[in-house]
Length: 359
Ligand code: COA
Image (tube, rainbow, N blue to C red; front, side, top):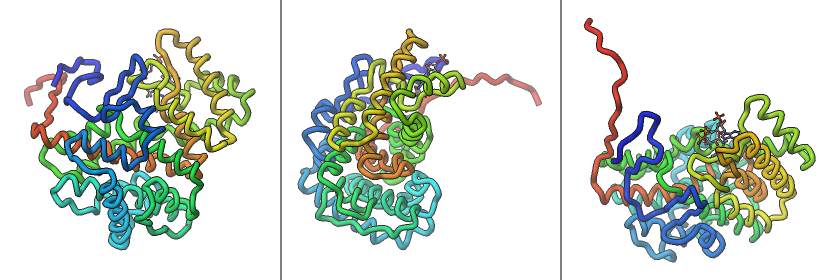
């Protein structure tokens, strides 16, 4: 572990990893050895998830992974009657955390990873349907993961364009360096605990609005703005009220988040009527924030076009954060596997700043 400064843990290196690399200055993201732009346009979720798991240390053939994942969705579905009221939670991340907690850890990380990845999709979709007063839909092991997730969520066969766009999204968010939820998963693993516990903890970390919760509010913002011509005045009012512009700014990136460009391209194929508005809002926000904060580059982050994409494929905004977890669970799993190989307990220090009082 490196030294933490008194101002925080930003940038402290806590692990060597093969899984992904975030270059915040240049705006590059490499996942399992390939640029995110290449992965998201040329490969589907199963292929990239298998690569990410292999980068973590669990080699698995993508074809075999695809059929194991289909079976894992079926097993997750069969477990639903034993989830108690987990899927009745008002919040989708709470439902996901509670339902995944029911999975039994086998103690074999590779098998548990497949179970967790399959289950996250089934439970996020089932929760969303229950929330809307609809009956959950059983998985189909023959379909690709993205196609099955959309079908289980919407109840209809999705268009190939929608499946491709969702696939690009799941690949794009599959891993992103040592973010808060990934670190959580690694800390839990480092104690010798099991993969399912690590995933449940990671879901808890992702639930926080500073980590995975902005795409819903981005959509609210686009709705409130309504027309491109109103973008500038709405943003000025919002900043005057002391609010932040959702979907803008990032802790690591000092340029536009590369994932924003990947998702913006993927949205084009959907003919979403929100794309033109989103671009106008991004331009206006970037211009105003540049003027206000010339020393602090604040550009679009992944969540800006996530909102447009997930809305465009027909998912309700309440399901956006759980859908982030449906992709990221593969990255978390790879980190668990990689962390296990180091066998070292993560035990950061703290600086005591209290006094000493004789009692
Ligand atoms: N809109 C307006 N101002 C913003 C801003 C935004 N989206 N993001 C940062 N700023 C401002 C802050 O107010 C701060 O100004 P100050 O120095 O006058 O107080 C300055 O930029 C630096 O912000 P800071 O809080 O240090 O940045 P951070 O690295 O902690 O924040 C985020 C990163 C992502 C939390 C932040 O940019 C944000 O809240 N964005 C909106 C929410 C969002 O899109 N989250 C998804 C992230 S993937």
